[in-house]
Length: 150
Image 1 (tube, rainbow, N blue to C red):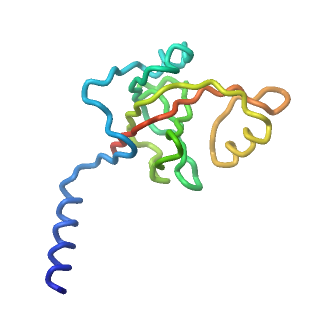
Image 2 (cartoon, one colour):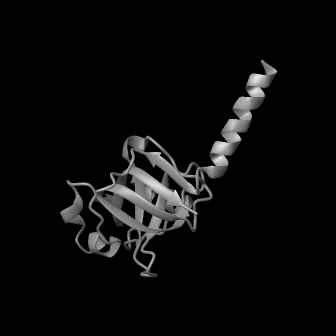
């Protein structure tokens, strides 16, 4: 029994060592999925609310409590960003994912956040553009699947 556990542990360690630095969450991103520049999606978010697309970028921050969202910015240094949530709250990203490259497949949504909702998100580290009353109009991306690379 001890020998079986030892062998299983060694195999698991070897698999992890050679698995690469890619972390996947949610459903697998299709190899032939249509990639759209994040800046293009942010310029016309209503065009990407029904058919899933793939966006790519760098994680600038993630939920500091659970990893239930991440902020994604284009890798080219463009300062625009989008908060990525995960469909049906089905998966989370590592709390230390800041700085990782990310690919996410999903759709956009535009939501007016109340002051309380905006306060909550900013309390978790989100960056929002707030109105005078404390509310925020947020373009977000709801991902079915995510790939993170160190």
